[in-house]
Length: 445
Image (cartoon, rainbow, N blue to C red; front, top):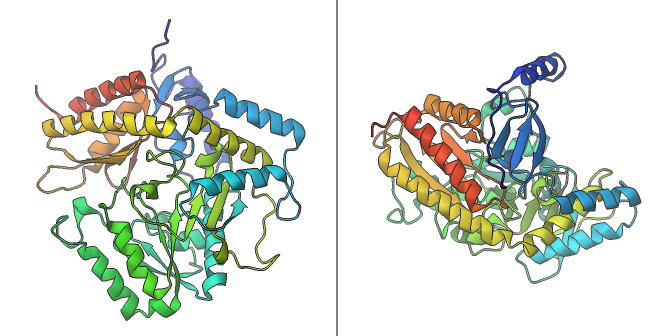
């Protein structure tokens, strides 16, 4: 008999959850942010369980860090086997064969044909930090460019590149100089234009910024997210990144692709940048490659990593257990054709949501690649005013019905289940979403 999900046996948050929340508030820093009071205890594939026994369909994949879901048996075995051999040893001081094996596999994923190199780190933002130092060393330039709405992390350098949510930057000193450029948010075009009639008007401002601010002589790299997940699952139009790369090349400004949460199938491809036909100068991988374990990496063409021995090292980066998990994840994605599944299930979700969009004046936009999908909730389609209260109500009601999703940007519901999800679970989740839309968006039918 096939089990039916989700299962809500105790209206959340239940008594055990409330007790755990009280314990947490006594000892955990108030700097952390919780979307709603879900107290997780265990998980299996696309299902997470809370301490009261409620079971939810995970539609945020651990905030995009668990691309293939929870505790896959093959990942668990790989972790156990490696732990019995050696838990960790610093690869930046000694040779570790498993590190070399993972580097070889990663370099099959990146798009360059010439020789390539990899530097392993421990956390997503650490890969950003390493790539900042690498680009400074290679170019001998020390200014940077990034997009408005960007999120690259909260360590010192990565925070400088982050423009989303100024609370994260309040009272914190920025370590590098960054020029921020408007992101191609076509639904809310800063220039009040529409694509393709605009002829990529937003790109013209980049060249103007480079010239007026003398960035050709000073900017080492331009950091991009091919899809701005945190800002609202915003997707640039086709052809955009190809033109951006051509704009930067005459100035010798590197294009660094931050894939720390978007790679390994999330967007229906090994890299989200694969949806555009370009070769970035560097690709950043994150914890999604190791099924949520702390691991990240910088991959570049070989000539970019011309720094000298001992110029940039790590003690905890490239943890051996995390590397074992990453190798098992790569094998699993290939064997189970999970890139294709992400595209297939994503298309099902987008098709149904676009049908819902026709019914509701408050669903302003539906957009997505693979299983990273955004539904922007607005006051009405004409004004496009963000409906922040309604979006949060949808998020809360979905959770209490057994669907763990999150709101990103101002009022965009992010739907991002593990790429292992089945069509049966997708359809159950869509039924829950449609029920909640009817409740919150007040459709009378």
